[in-house]
Every structure is written in structure tokens, then in C-alpha cells.
Image (cartoon, rainbow, N blue to C red; front, side, top):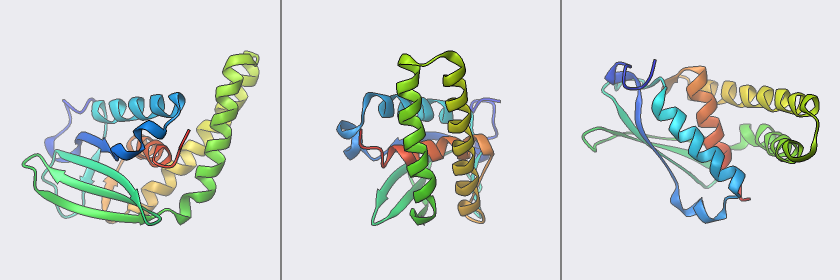
Length: 162
């Protein structure tokens, strides 16, 4: 189901990432950012608990060791602002960065089976990050696993400085 087919109350219609990081991103990180945002808009499940009047516009930023979910309605009214500590994500993000670097190097020089092995590890960490984000959003925002994984990618991009 695409966002166009989803009920208006259960989806993101727009996602903005803090613009101040744009020039600091490597080409790989910028690609990850663009793909995650595109995929999120095309297919997502996102509901702010207690305010089921989407679609929503999400602005993501990081400040003071927190990831900020600034959520707006289609009528440009703030729905909610949620800050999550980044501390629980530090290990997964660090491991994810390392495996992504290995993956990007491997796709240039490694055999297909080596690339597949690294990619499996990368997907495992991505799932772990998505699970943790979904857990941390519990009671505030309801998301499906696919949406959570893509939001985890954006959380990583906010800290990926090339």
C-alpha cells in the first residue's frame, strides 16, 4: 500500500531533515537520506497517539543528545514535539556506521558472496535499530516496522558526517 492509498490519518505526507547537515554528508549518506525520505513518503504507517488527524509532516533534527520529532498537521498546526534520548541508540548507530563503511568498500572490490554476508549483517543491525526506535516511540507514535527502519536510517544520517 502506498501513502496515496493509505488512510489520511495514518501516514506521513512529508519528511524534512535538518538542513544544517546537508553539506557535511558523504555521497553515500546523502544517497541513504534521499532514498529513506522517498521510500517513507511512498509507503508508511505513522500515527500520533491521541491525535489521529493526519496526514502529518515530520521535521527531524538532533539537539542536545536527542532526536527531535517535530510533527505538524496538513493545516500547518503543530501536533506534537517529541524528543528521544540518543543514548540507547549509540551502540547500534556506531556498529551500523562501521558495517555501512565496510559495505560501501566491499561493493567496489569484494566478491558477491562477501558483499552478501556484509549486507546481511547490515540489515540485521538496521532491523535492531528499527526495533529499538519503535520501542522508544511506543505510547507516543505508532509506526510499522518498515517505517521504523526508514526513520532509523534518518536518525543515523543526522549523525553521519561523511
